[in-house]
Image (cartoon, rainbow, N blue to C red):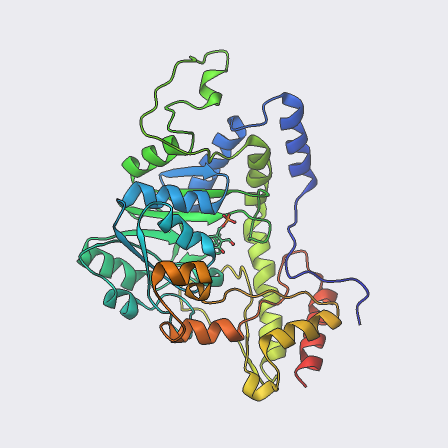
Length: 385
Ligand SMILES: Cc1ncc(COP(=O)(O)O)c(C=O)c1O
């Protein structure tokens, strides 16, 4: 058994990034500034969007996106297989969250269930590319067009994912936005941080102003040698900017993203091969042709009727072998706060509820050595024997 604990996720930050962070600190310009602007340009180029707006988390980005496209009282449909942020962004915009159950194979929102939930009040859908597997965007875009609703892709897991030849986050016209997360467990990090991408100029203007208290100029444009200190407030905003300290890490991480994702895919291929013969594990489904999965997380299902133990017991057993695991997610409407708001109860989202009881995330990060991968495989094989 390995001596040290293997966490389920760990970021890889280069010495160049650390040096660039120090440079920001020494320069005296720590907050949003030239490095943030540079990171945004590089990010827009990477995904293929006209605009990239950096923020201090994907939670903030989702909030700005919902506020840009939705009015208080509107309904916004999303998936129950997501993190709290997706719902919080809807609720804090004064909109009403409506959930549509997931597809049992992809674990993404089921377009058929989504269309069933559309009412005259529906103004947007937030598909979540769960684990980095692209949602069925052709179907979702068709539904959105038919019912004239906006799309906000929660792409927190989908850095580098490709859907039918185009990157997740690539510009898709008006009322279509994508939001990424750079939390340290994600495929690339800035510590905390996020990025919004869109081709919608009106929404982009509003979101970039609203992320800095609604001011038409950031400190970056006011305090420099050529800056003017007067500013206007177009619209009440929030304090959601990214700092140059974060952007220094982010622009370096972006250079390595494809390499990181390649390593993630290699590890997944080894897991798939080793676990194919393990009874009681249902492995993630193969990705659709012409799509790339970014493998933010690797999430087999523990079939307790075959293993004789539950997912939680599996996690405890893995800990005894010094292997960390996590789980993403409990169906979100089962949290007490959301049960009240959505009016949903156990039994209302049967697919997501069943998956939420079985799903587990095994260690997956680019710095894992082949020995780390062997250790996970051995532990899983022993636990499930
Ligand atoms: C699906 C999803 N959406 C949104 C978020 C929020 O990201 P952040 O932590 O950057 O606010 C997360 C974070 O884990 C997530 O998994």
